[in-house]
Amino acid sequence: MVDHISATAERNLALEAVRVTEAAAMAAEEYMGRGDDLAADRAAVAAMHQALMGMNLVGTVRIGEGAEGEVPHLYIGEKVGTGNGPVVDVAAMPLEGPSIIAKGEPNGLSIIAMAEDGGFLGLTALYMDKIAVGGGLPKDVVDLDEEPAVNLRELAKAKGVEVSDLVVCILDRPRHGELISKVREAGARIILIAAGDVSGVVATIWPRSGIDIYMGIGGAPQGVIAAAALGSVGGQIQGRLVLRNAEDHRMASDMGIEDPQRKFTCGDMAFGNLTFAATGITNGHILPGVRRLRGVPVTQSLVLRSRTTTLRFIEAHHDYLQRTPPVGRSPRWHEGE
Image (cartoon, rainbow, N blue to C red; front, side, top):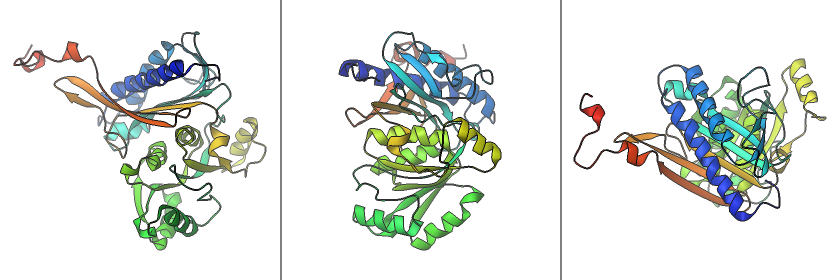
């Protein structure tokens, strides 16, 4: 979003972004627990793409589903929107963790972030070591290069609590065995998640989530998208690429990363005027999943705007009049029709 966009136009863009994630979430929810992660992903991608193409913007996908020619929709460089409206870069994640939906596990989200032209660090298909905390804390209160015990001690001090009061979110992966041991030795508590590290990072901004800090290795694109959320409300994230082999080094070089050991901050990964929206598909730390009340799909979404540092929750009842039966009458599908 560029500087000349009016506050009203930007606000409308934020609300339209929520409609995009709502569409993807409802499409994916149809496949919850059915064991078919590919079908869930395809449905979410198609729904998000259709909704994006109807938005009044001149958008370019910077983080998406893959390279042009590899995927039909939301590929890197694809132009989205009607061609009228603000010029934005788009980071699209129609379905974070398709396996989450296939298994009916917690923390399934549909996510989109938007930045002014050139506002996203273009990282794809690589891993990143990350540490993240929410807003209202001293700058650099935690540091990726410090030991977990040091970071937890400093975070506890900044929050005015004991280390034992802190909860750390970590992806449940064998690679995190040493990290988990060190966090436990420091005295903090841990929530291990099966997938969805964007949800784990974003949870740090909302005190009611019960998560104080995120640590560990996940996807680099997810780090950029999470930075858009944290950067909207004063959170902090640091990340460093994890390059496992010569191919990873080549990819990083192709992306213009000159120093593979560089420690990226929130502002390095997502900057300028930012909009972030997420809709819950399955129940999670921040958002409940899609529910169906008397045939009406109900979604819960989170939208963040950096211009106003606003965190807004939105509940939507979709096709309410069309789907809700008259009072005293059961829906047709309860009458055997």
